[in-house]
Length: 367
Image (tube, rainbow, N blue to C red; front, side, top):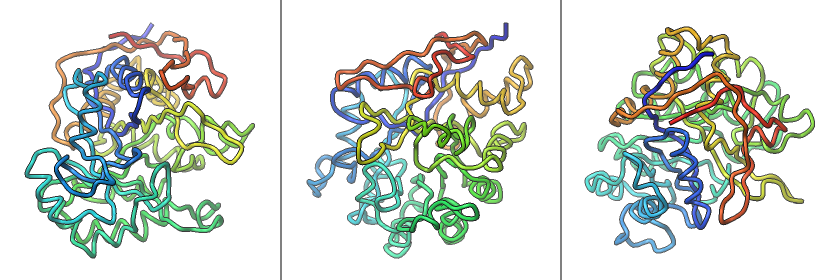
């Protein structure tokens, strides 16, 4: 039976939401060996300012949201990064002052109306024109991007020869990369070969996160039987794309791709008028990553491959964000683990495997 021990890790893309359920979502991450998180700011209202004392009363501040997370158990984490949601009201001065305060370490670009609570997003060009990206580069603030072109019609959004992500990584983000070589950029939840190649071909200031679901599944798995618990944005893509992501993650020389689950809890996933985007992988993400690595041909009974896995899960991301590695550990064992519903005060949340009628997963975790 294969078993190996790893340092506790940072989930560098997670949705902890808000309200009564947050305590359970925080605990789910603690229960899978997380020592810290990068918590997404697309709350209601969004985290659109840095300090409580800032004007713009329609937004929560980073200070506000950090306090909520810590109050609901997040004070146990070694570190929490809350990115600033880039809105029409984001200014270079806000970036400069926020960075000086120590609270602003990252900012999140959402394509307008492109995903859950992305209504406050603005086109990428806005932040080039108003010097927000310049201020971020000058002040060491990381740009986290949801990399999809906004406002596309169906055939341009998702087609055999073109998707919204491919348009973004060929027509939009290269302009930012070229204009601001010192700006650190993370392409989050990569789904395409095109996006993976952009990260690989860019300099050391560009990196990317990959979710468990995009390593494990393709759009065919989503559509065959319409498995709506597998619905997330960006959408799962094709086998060529999954193969590119797998190759990037298991590459022994990988220094750019790391874990960011995009775990997104929904107590109501599917409604008569549509489906909420996001897969919940809290409590089980390291186990799913281990499963994905082995399905990608990386046998984790081999010590060399264990080190490759540890780099992806535990070290490349913290190194990119300048986070301290943990001295605490957890253990993964190739032994089936039962998957159960997450009970919260807001209602039950279905973990991804259960949504796919898989009641056990191949790997288990102990703290």
